[in-house]
Length: 159
Image (cartoon, rainbow, N blue to C red; front, side):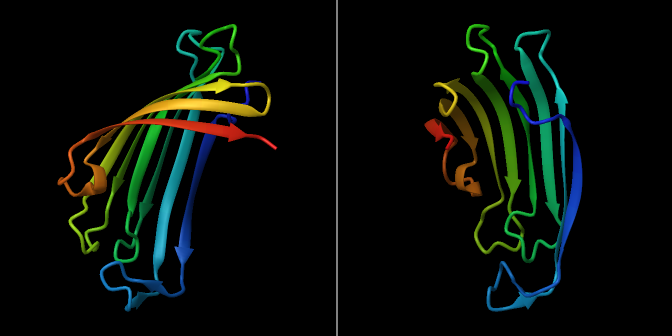
């Protein structure tokens, strides 16, 4: 197996019944913080473009926007291992995410979205290096910052 998570479906939720500060006024509290979430992933090698691949999507919905700064979030994408057959442990990643701020947030934040492309290079069994490219739509969620191209680099060590 390639090390990708097992495909499947997860559904769940949460119930909070203790003191939660209100987003609009943190000195006030609510006794409710509830929500639901789901995750689905299915195998997808794109006609054997990769040795192993998955299409995935997840979402969460908070039901109490007065205590949840980002009550709605969803994301999805595709991940594939072995795009280059001589590099079976490398991973290509394409993803999208979207977050919506609560109408209770005292700032003008409304939403932010990101599209990302990355390629994780396996450097042996315990180290990876992943350059990535992101396009951020509506950075900071207010509409006052122009969309941004972000270049990044991650390095992971497995102990």
